[in-house]
Image (cartoon, rainbow, N blue to C red):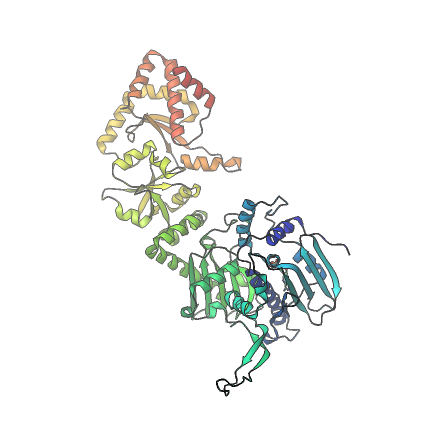
Length: 634
Ligand code: ADP
């Protein structure tokens, strides 16, 4: 019989599994058990919603069996089973997410290590059996079908499917273990004790019984020392798991490791979560929630592929894998489970959105997440900084995309880097440090905090003893513009033409200087043409000869961000003002040139303008002309 080949991507994953450098091979068992449990969920759900088959919860189980002679471990379930087509598609293809991973490339260790991380994120699934198996067989009969099928594979060379006999619907997975090697003891998976321990460790919360035939030693307590023992060994079926879902347990009885294991197994993360939130609520809505804030963003988090949502159970029966209506977009990073007795099993996706109960639960959950985040900020600042670096963008985006409607709600979660020790600060902390006469919350935009600190405009503000928020992400300034103010303090960019720093006297001096040099500034403006809207004397410069400030709503940073967007209609330009430091020695040079050599004065004007652009991190319009002009001067 001809062997069928795995799809290319699957083959690559399979290679990885077979030659696995993944040290934690034992997790294959939890993966197979979890698949079995999902298959039972599907059938149980069907029986509850269609009500035709008369099955009840007590009818379901997962059965493990060991055979030392054959070196096999088998996992059977009486779940929904698979048809021939389902065996083909489910077990012949992986990477359903179509992420383009695992292309048919050469396998090298470094790449493999990177891929293992990714596997961790997807969940290793069925193929993990190949970490320990020389052969994997699947015997399955779909619920409601008459024919059973036998799928066999020894790994990368493909698989076969043939018709077979199987009495009941459901699936049996038979794993033939590899021979032991110097590094790896595969035989341990044939020991009752190991299997029992693994089930306890990884699958205790599975809501159907996981049973196995075990040898039970009966003590004959009557016999005396030295007397012959008449104890008997019998074989009995034993349930290995406690079956209480972890979220229904008493908080005090759950260890941190258990919470973390559950998280990693259920939500396919390889790292422990940053925060676990376990709550049990009674009142207008009654529910248990187990929520997690991940410590790392999933690789696709900031893309369209990422789907938010919490797993939703109605009285212990899973009704939806990712219910979007339970978390707002700005908290989309939260993973977890919600179980409520108030919900009907038959509820459809469309109805969920309208459901009063779901809305109440969602509101509560949102409040809970926020208060837990605020308490983390207060009590575990380092954790909060980790959180903010990972997911802060999403929260800022929440303010921006709601046109500021969420600003009041989210403002206390915000953090920015600041000129104060270059570290993160909250807005409240900033305001608490503001000087008495300080009118504004100052901010500056740039690529890095180092670059911002060197901006000519920053000097004046810092010298006045005021703190500056450093906005290093594209979304930052847009967010600030949407917020407009924080607790009645207005935000103000250090590039804004009015910084509120000048005394009346300063203003007079500047006006006077601008007036005195009226002709020169007009000449410079004419030289630069449309590039600037005006040239004027600066109040903010100390050591730098020139800088660019902006008038109107669009800042230089916004211009940069918009220029990076694909939509050409967005290529809006900021209205730039060239500010000149009339105290700088370059200024007297240009004054002289204006009188003696206007051609040269033009060259200088262009050079100064380009220099100001460079400092701002803006591209110069004609780099070649700029370079030539410099050469000429040299
Ligand atoms: P995942 O469980 O993440 O979807 P797997 O590779 O573990 O990925 O499994 C692939 C698919 O094979 C499952 O989605 C399911 O449809 C099917 N499957 C696996 N094990 C079973 C089983 N015991 N009973 C029924 N279907 C199963």
